[in-house]
Length: 112
Image (cartoon, rainbow, N blue to C red):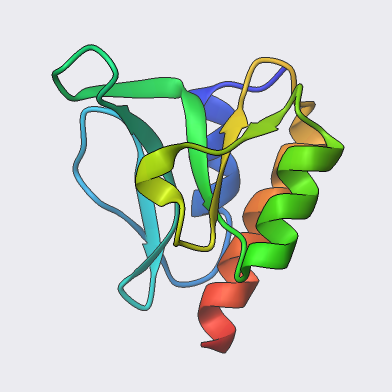
């Protein structure tokens, strides 16, 4: 079971990462976001959810594969329809898998 503290520890353990001041979490490398807390607007106002991470995945094929293949962990939402991002529910993911996902997102942003 992963949480915001695991996200922070894993992201800050990668080279060149900066944390942006936020009510949730927001991590960037070379000025590009790779993992941040989900800004939920379903209630009509913006609420940062630290139990859901937005992850950069690079392309739509990967995004679709994650969301369709593991719907208990990943989901999509309309504001991100055209972006290479997927939403990850933190409580059901184990910490080692979270580390792989964060590292992959960081690596893709470095390669751009």
